[in-house]
Image 1 (cartoon, helix red, strand yellow):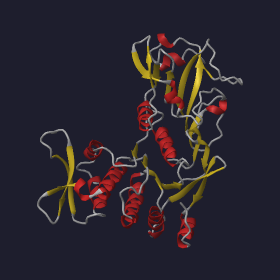
Image 2: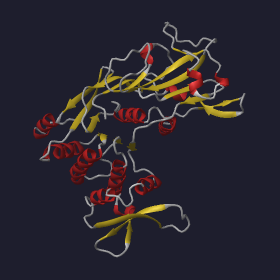
Image 3: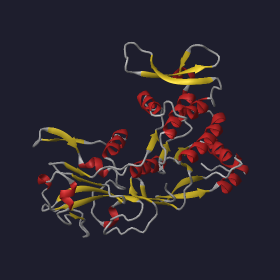
Image 4: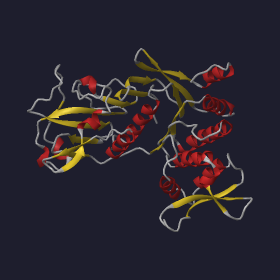
Length: 381
């Protein structure tokens, strides 16, 4: 779990430091203040720079630039794709040009071997022919062949080749040769558990896969209790084949106490489907992270406090750190009421991201400060 957060040179976040985090964190702020970017950064941190996640994020933002390599006769990812991760989308090699995501630490940018809790991504030059290497261990054992350029020039010397390096404190290491002979070296990936709930309901097959992981466990009951926020008569839930033309496509259905037939969950409205997505993601994030973009989407203000209550309870029980974004005053109010309305002391924080003079800065509110703001009807979005 992250006790603090530092993000450097990632997308529109030049340098963001949040001094303390809670178990459940609600992120608010105006458009273009980096709320969704913060969630992406934490996902990359949890995934230890996993390339599948990076490509997924590139695709969602229409950043998966492609080029045709005439020497290989096929289309490949362009270096421009990876440069979109960096603050100004430039390919640079100075020590300050690395991306850092993790706890607040004093890292040595000239030799970013992360000893603390963090992840570093940087462009590098190297002078070794990697065509002969099949494993990253072979590449690394040849000595210090990964070199950053500490000169004033950011031009790429023809004597060197261009690469992307991803390193984490737990030894996960990825190196990508970014030129026409595009080559990837990667150590075994040791990701932390995480789920990322986007602004719209995710594909049905994702929910089906998450449900299959909790069948016949107590977590089934957590999901059903959450669905009862919308309809107290929900008795059971299952994923079944409803379309004979697509036998492999399963649909979420519920059994209601008041009926002997099953009802497709989708027919019951956006709210109950949004809750299903959030709670399934939460109960599949044990000892990891749950990321929710635009929490309030599809949810009436009257149900949000109850959903926050369940999230606070389950996040503590399952040791899940939650990060959610919002534009909604109702969402903030429901968060505050759930946070301060429980007789047990809950661990939650609200963080507002402000853009001032081109710099994004966080403003942190603990439970007591948030209650004062709420009681005074002060807008905080």
